[in-house]
Length: 334
View 1 (tube, helix red, strand yellow):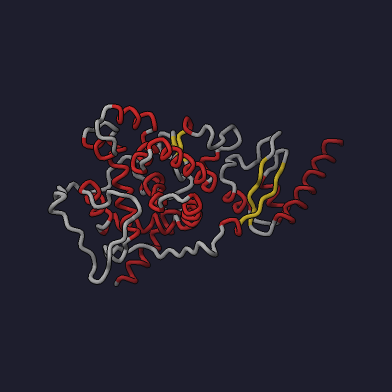
View 2 (tube, rainbow, N blue to C red):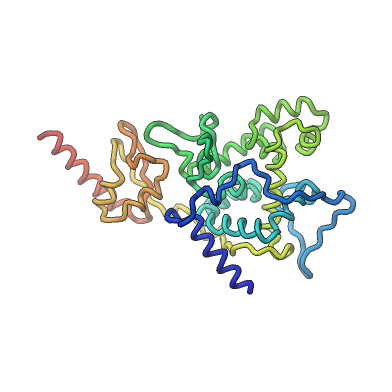
């Protein structure tokens, strides 16, 4: 029965995230601030007990507070059949990006629990965009928050690039941690802004996230944001303990390198990805998927840009670009 359920979840994953899905995107997309849990009254801290499957030990998810009542209600929700199925689908289809996120977290010596922020932000969809259109991408950057992190102009939007936006998000989270010296406050600031958290701390005698929540000094969505992350990361770190059904995820820090899968070629003038794909005799969709920031399908004019390519294609791409530039030069002289 469990194999059948897992197969059904995998099929659902394909349907949800396929560009040609038979379901409208709105069917699967919930507002960012929606509270995904049933209304329950958590046990008190003294009464609450964390019991797991027989013979298993609980592993800390790497951030403090996972045992709190505020987290327990979200954990119960994500362990329910409905929300558990949603979490399975999100994590399954986020694998292509989770490898890169985890590698970068390890390189930056940051908590691995941060890997699950895109679960909340975008359901691990690189092209996610709420109806209001204000935030975009895997990490849901607002346009007014990208200065110094990402570029956006009439030709490109790096918020749509899952690799560049991951680097930017980790840089921002690390800056938040440097500001507050506390990861829970840093995560809350990622959601509601550094200024909002600073103002809240000024009004509170106790300088910690839970005190700000108790006194409602930060917005409701930020109050729920951190416990949701703690619940998801705790379940992911303790699948056997909670008897959760999550997709298998293999990661070997010693052997995995995301850059083994890419090559790059730099251009100094505008190049159409469609024309480059034709010259390389490859599917245009491959180049578009690997360069999602180029939402017009071409590099910006009059500036350098590195086009991301499949591995071991730099030489062929250089030859193709030479042919395209020669063709363009000949056309200009006629």
